[in-house]
Image (cartoon, rainbow, N blue to C red; front, side, top):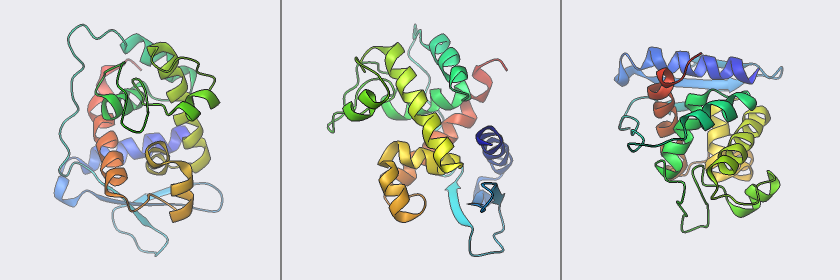
Length: 195
């Protein structure tokens, strides 16, 4: 089900990318766990997902000699994730810097907080292989939990408690910008990995 939702989000995003001004996408998850998408919400259960392609720069390129593409591909596939999605999260989180440490204490390529790293079985979050393994596993758990890529990304950024509290993407500008940025990068990186 999560793969279906990911495919639909990517497909809708690519279609919407043709006309950024008209790229408002709305979504909701029904009682059977099916994610519905539309650009014309006809029921109040729909929630605006993201503004695809608006005020979001194109995905950054990894630095010359950056050697983690293979690691991303293998690890993402082990977790049932598209490698382009994992690469997009890395770009948004650390700009491809394996030694990145945020003011809040998040570490490594996928910016794992110490508690999250420990819960994913990661002993050294600054080791790229461990960090990508832990971050990919956590992202896969959030997708399975919410059945919706936008909410999963919001939970990755702001924590699942915030997504649960607001019943969707929290009204934090940073989180909404983060979700939009990752989805844009995901679309841009789609061709970087073989099927």
